[in-house]
Length: 288
Image (cartoon, rainbow, N blue to C red):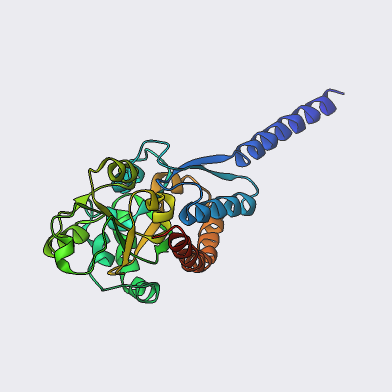
């Protein structure tokens, strides 16, 4: 009898260890992902698709919680350091706004090097290996990138000649943009997206250099009447994960997330192009 009791005691102990192991393995990893863009912006829609796909593919073991419109208080130019320092485990990073940390991330802002998505995609073949190394230097990993296909200059008056630009306070994103507009005679002001609409409404700036999608997000037709589509460059958002958070995942979960990011990226590029066309139509309908 004692022999059987000892056997059952051992079996119960083994079962308890197995149940504990299963509960640990099934623990849900929750990642907060901040973005400065509104929930309706196509970049945010791509984030939502990615988060949903990751949750499904990992059977709910990895859950990405999205925070739109700068809700966590982080500004666009800060995101490389925010992810690096582990303030968030994953983040949406506007690449050419990070030149304060790494000048190379401004390469797509060089005038007319990549004025459209085709040129930008070709450029990516050469720049991505360098960007991956730079991301690792900053304790993070690039999962995927999504382009901003167009570049417009929104102003209250029509820009027909260089003379029309003189003295205009134009919001810019990167140092490269700022240098270009300075050479053209404007008075550029580098500014994160979260400050743009208020600054435009209060007259702090006279115009904005940004995409068609952002023009719709900001309802620029309420403040400006013209959009000059110059397309002097294209840019990208990177979705980067902190390496400390990444390395806590099992190799199996890492592979699932990497595969999902690789599969979705071409779809996101297509969505960006389609969305850009739709937003241009809206701007025209609104009188810009």
